[in-house]
Length: 211
Ligand SMILES: Nc1nc2c(ncn2[C@@H]2O[C@H](COP(=O)(O)OP(=O)(O)OP(=O)(O)O)[C@@H](O)[C@H]2O)c(=O)[nH]1
Ligand SMILES: [Zn+2]
Image 1: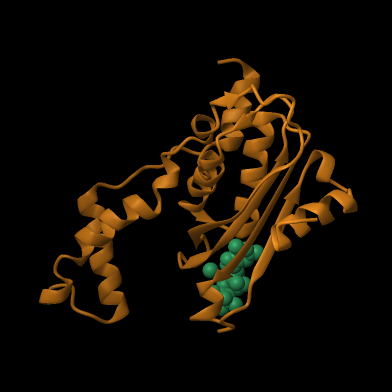
Image 2: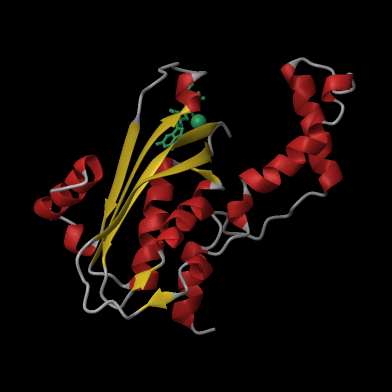
């Protein structure tokens, strides 16, 4: 692996820089039992008896993004597009993630646009890319940047625009308790960066489906 590929892999690798010392399933289940007791309940009562097992299993699904590789998601590029080089935009991609501060869900939609140069990716791959990063412990800002960087590196497009709109349960059902407050984040590269007209076009397509 040459240095360029190595540094690229590092940037797109799971959020943890060091290899993670994963516990055994038994240890994970014991931790859930402890949290049930911390919540004030009895992990041995009938209704909760199998809960640690279910939670450990659910974690595999909710945090499956750590085992997924964004390179693989974006590795098939279609070059035959008859010279198409205008914007490709998928909007309203729904996602569920968990904030890294409280491990409480945040959910919403992602909008992704890019101007192709060397080719296009299958549209579903844009949604898969969102999944890779959503199914990790996240901040909305990091997730937005990671999606833009992955596309930038895989497609070398003329520009990438990513916008995420989400509600954070840690702000709705606890803490400041502002249900319905929506956080917007965006990351623009290339033709979109520092270009108000391009950004306005992207936003208009996201909001109205037309310019
Ligand atoms: N910037 C950013 N903040 C987030 C995100 N998800 C959750 N947070 C915030 O993370 C912050 C953590 O703040 P702390 O003061 O360390 O924790 P806390 O005492 O639980 O904060 P409160 O939520 O205000 O009760 C809170 O302000 C959350 O709203 C995110 O995706 N991006
Ligand atoms: Zn939070």
